[in-house]
Image (cartoon, rainbow, N blue to C red; front, side, top):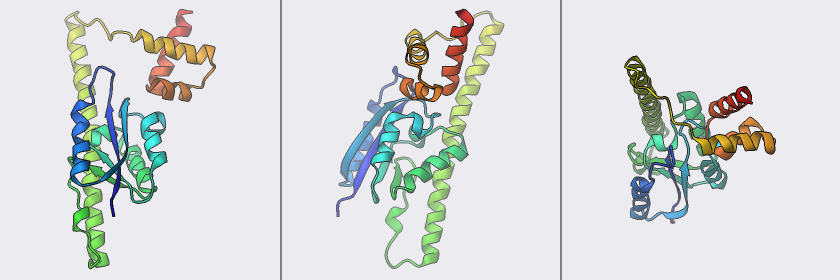
Length: 210
């Protein structure tokens, strides 16, 4: 019986390119999976699945036995560990299996002759590998943020820091959704594919300058 997979690809900004992640499609073909959908998204990995339209659509479309394929864990999530585990559980609750290209997949070791204990051991090891990947994805994100802060601090000390360039298009969209269309902060975050913190900051700045 042919297995069904759904592929998820994500980058953080519109300046980044999804092309590098296309190799996951070739992996699916190599395994002779039927590709039921390819979900491409430009959004932060620190957003929950409900804040990412394509990931939300993928999860909503999942059927029992489907395989969710992702190139790397940090493409799926950079959320803090408890929230990341919750995302994985949401996928599993649909009866789906998660395949991360750079995380060892032990599913090939399962067979009908295995004892309950053997299956429990394999499940435990697979969960451990996934959890380690979740932790590493978040740690990498935190490391990047820390280096950015340190770089800014050095630049400020040398009077070379000019601040982050304002995303005028995003700011205008947020203001329009809030004051012209009266959307909630959560709805704006989803529509603009940005964090709630960004939405609140833009609205606060707008009120201050009004």
